[in-house]
Image (cartoon, rainbow, N blue to C red):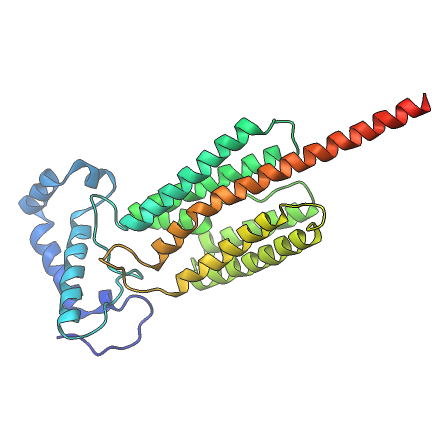
Length: 300
């Protein structure tokens, strides 16, 4: 009934004739005329608002039919349309990843509010940390939306991340040009996942090395340098969880969800680092001002 276990790129399940025939039959039977009107009237409002259609419901039901046949014949669970099969909860297509993304966003928001309440606006790096936090919140928002409902728009938004590089130097200008070229290629030429992953991995490696060098160079002057190094190593190390790529446990928890869940505590460590950085810079500035006053007093 099923084809041989040929190696296909992340969408073996939706290429199966049994799946395609099931979807065609379901759409033809349930998604036209009176049956379609019945589906729409019975569909919960939250499902309609998040864009679930009759065809989407057919794909969901046929996906589980195909998974059942695979398991009955002793084959491993396949992916469908580039994703593992997940048990839908309410309107959430990937419940665990959506929840983890939401918790990351809440952790980021909580620490940003705490940072704003403890650090004066005129302090060094205040506006930089705020801008970084807002970009992070935006990224976690789209991650939550994407894992709630996977569409072309939400996929593009979460892939691009809407990251905005700084413009305070020539390096910032070059980063903007590189980022603009990257987004333009993905948007107008080809939405190439392999290219996008390679670009992100390259930038991530440069970022890792740059931060580790900064931490090492400042280890004698900043007693809390280890917090920075630990945050960088955790963020890049935890990303390796993505390589596990196993079928979801209980049809809910996969490697991607585990990765997102594991990054939640990192937000607290990062903001403790930037708070320590502020207090250190403030003490250094006060010490310099005190030295200037002493010099002026001696000269007078």
